[in-house]
Length: 218
Image (cartoon, rainbow, N blue to C red; front, side, top):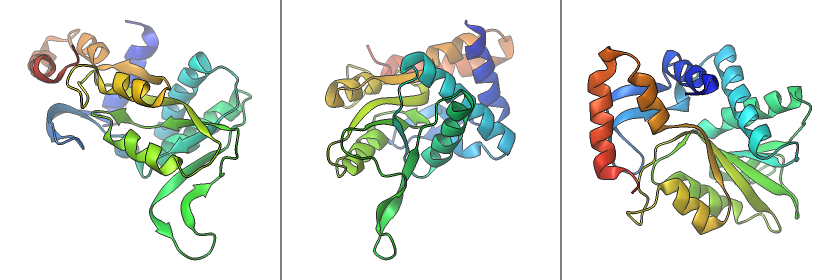
């Protein structure tokens, strides 16, 4: 395993972002592990997370200037920290996020921060994709911005689970449906490989593998 992947998984686990047990995903699936960016609670942690996203951005997108979109609520801090990390690497990109409910006074609308203009490209930063539900909600919101397009989506972990069609992964379905790539820092098989390095993780490894046998993309 590449060293940065191990470092990232260790970071997620130490910060409480990556947990093992019994959880229910937004898709309704019962899952044996959970990835929750909401557990990031300190300046040092969110700065570190932003650095990993920035590294992935620069590897996949390069120095191309886009607009970062962080879906409320967990995506907000990811967008902010990623933009700061990119700025430290010489790429100053604007960011924005959505309100859960449209504001009918003041500036109004559902977006806060920079509003992309026609011809500009947007990059969505999310914590994780399970069945693609949250991304589809984001695309519905972003469809109100005329003349813009989504260039890519970045997430922490690719869960490698089937999407709505029951064959392809949710990330592959999103890519096919909307025509942009979805990148992840690590995937569930990286997590399994990491866990297998310590025998005490045997039960979690077995539970995740059993889950993927049913819900994993073919």
